[in-house]
Length: 120
Picture 1 (cartoon, helix red, strand yellow):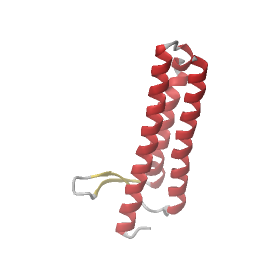
Picture 2 (cartoon, one colour):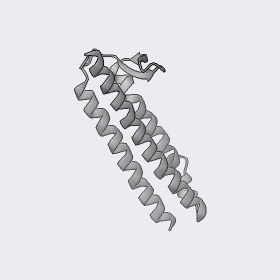
Picture 3 (tube, helix red, strand yellow):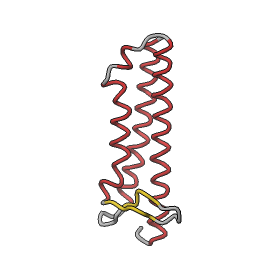
Picture 4 (cartoon, helix red, strand yellow):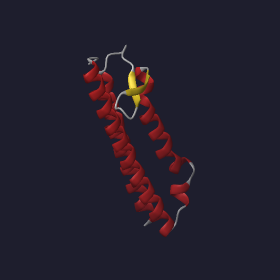
């Protein structure tokens, strides 16, 4: 059972990273290189912090890779047995989904803001 959970967890992690990377690539192609990308919005809905395109578009994919790979690199996925293996699987599945949704939500607001600003 542990091996099956590890393999399915790896598959879900790969799927999440694929979604994250694909959406970042699509936004990269769509956003001109001289445009600063908003990453934080204030309570009024206006961008509070903008960063250069590479940092603004790649911080979630890089952080996601680090978080998702932490389970494998630490050996947690290989050492977990029984109920612990199921808990690790659930954590990996949930993290993958949350990180993919964070990327999709972030890029939706980035594109919306840039369109409103007339930068796209």
